[in-house]
Every structure is written in C-alpha cells, then in structure tokens.
Length: 435
Image (cartoon, rainbow, N blue to C red; front, side, top):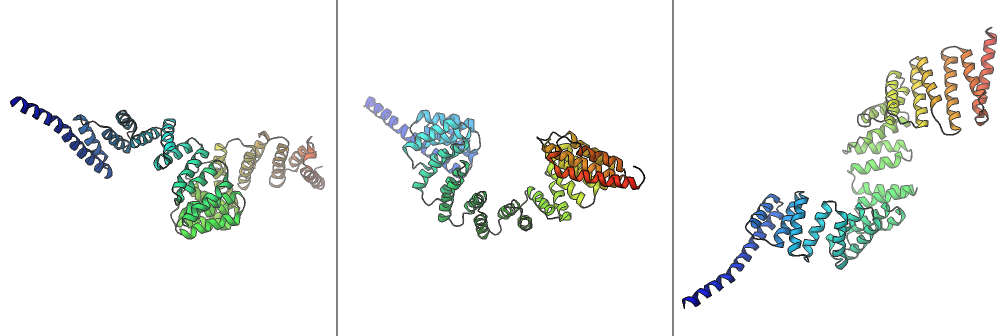
C-alpha cells in the first residue's frame, strides 16, 4: 500500500505541476497584456524578465517582450526577443508579423518585405501586413507595387478613403498625376471632408494649367476647414506662382493670422509686396525673412528694396552680402553687380559703381548673350562719365567700345544707341570748344 500510495502521489504531482504552471503563465501573460494596453512598457518588461528568470519560458512571453522593447525603441533587444519567439513557434502569424515590424524598425527593408510578402500572399485579409508592405515599397520608391497592395486592401475595405487617397499619391509619385485623379475623387466620394484629397487635386490641376478647377478644389477645402492656416498658405502660393500678387498677399496674411509660422511665408509676402511696388511693406517682411533665409536671393531682394526706397547705404550692405554668398550663376551675377552699382551711384560713390560694372566684364556668359550683358555694363559706365562725372571724352571712349565690337551685328539696338550718343557728345564738345 505504501508503495502504491507513493506512486499515486508522484503521478498526481506530475500531472498537477504543469497545470499549475499553465495557470501561472496565463496570469503572467494577462498582467503583461494589461501593462501593454496601458502603455506601461517598463512594467511589461519587468514582468517579462521576472517570468523568464523563473524559467517560465514560452513563445508568447518572448513575443510580448518584443512588443514592449519595440514600443520603447529598443529595436535590437526586440529583435532578439522575437527571434526567440520564432524558434519556439515559427508558424504563428502574430509572431511573424511582429518579426516583420521589428525588421522594418531596424531598416532591414528586404527582410521585412520578405516576411510581410509571405504573410500577405496567403492571407490578403491581413491588413497590418499589407500596410507595412506599402510603407516598405514607398521607402524603396516602388510606388507601383505599393499601389497594387493598396488596391487589394481597398477591395477588402471599400469604404476606407485613406486607401484610395494613398493610391492617388502613389500615382503622383510614379509621375502619373492624371491617373491619380479618379482615386482622389473616389476618396472624396467616401468622405466629402477629405481636405487632403482636395489639396492634391488642386495641385494636379495647377500642373495641368486648369486653374479654375484647381482653385475650386482649394476653395472647397477652405469651406470645410475655414480656420486651417495651411490651406490659406496654399491659396497664397497658388496666386503667387501665377503672379497674382494682389490676391496672394491677403491669403498669406490670413494664414499668419490663423497661426501659420513657417518663415517661408514672410519671404513670399515680402517678394509680393516688392513686385507690386509697395516697398515699405516689402522691407518689413523681407527683414523678418532674412533672419531665417540668409541666402543670396533674399539679401538681393532686400538690397533692391532699399534701393527703391532711396536708402543706398542699407542697399549696398545687403547687396554686398548677397554677392559674398552667391554661386557664380552668370545672369544673377550680372543683376547683382548692376543693382550694387546703382546703390553706389545713389551714394555718389561713382568710382565704386564703375568698379562693380567692370566686374561684369569678367563673368563667363554663355555664347553671344555675354556680349549683350557686357555692352549693357559699358553703357552704364559711359552714362556715369557723361551724367555724373561730366567727362564726355571718357563716355565717348566707352560708347566706342560697343561700336567697335566685332559682334556688333548681333545687338543692333545697342550699336545704334552708342552711335547716337557719340554723335551728340561730339557735337556738345565741339560747341564747348573742346573738339
């Protein structure tokens, strides 16, 4: 009896122990799940570590540990945990999806692609795998593949306007903007308040130069969200790039009033005011812009604004700054040297003005255009000698450079102008008794 009783107790304990362990693991997993739901990842990791240290090892436990590590951006630790989970249960779909997520987080795009592709191939209803596949394809700039996955997902979830909008974006990225139109239209049919789709349609029609349609979509978006500052900025940009600056300015100002604070807007407003010749307001906004955009174009525009306001001292400061930053693009250099010379003329610093015009002679222009711009510089120098320094002989000398130019036939108006000037100046010198 003793022997039989002992065997019975041992057998009973052997059966009881795994049952108790199974019940204990259930409770641990339940506590970990609650911690993950509450985003208490520190507690989740503590519970995982405690269970593993107590030899309560399972694929589910490593799977939960990976989720916790990934959630706190410890991707390498998450990778080790999910590999352990896969070793214990390689066919579990949830574990494989988590493995794909970790690979994606580690930028192992080819591995993630392979994992999610295998899952999605056999189960196109696995929405998470499909969404991650689209992200991978977009990262790899494989937009046609991303489009096909979105299309498959949309067949399963036909009232999800996000999917149709993303299909339109894929067509844009794939340089097939016209083919994007029906997908954005479908997104709007599903959700008439989808302002992102309205915005994309507006930009597509702008590119197609169908401006009335473009404006109608943008205005529709503004009607839906009248306090959206980004939309008013887009409206300002729409008018700005069509050179409708009187319409661009109020749109930009409304965007600022509603909280738009990207410094680019101040540069655009300043430029618009400059182009409609409201130089005081142009100065105000360009001075704000220059705090962020320390680039040659903004300095140049500000310098020209001060020149128009007859403030040559400030003008020359900003124009010189632009020159110091400028890349050597010939036409821009010509414009900048010309504006700088004008600022020195207004300050009656004629020698400095002449030196700036002479800099134009050293610019390497393309083909025959160089002769035109260099002739313009010669004319300006001649005018300084004629009008400001009262040196008619020097002026004639410069005009003669144009007349004697071997390529004079290319720029007949400049030649005629120089010949007329030489004739008149020589007449004046004759009557003055100097010739």
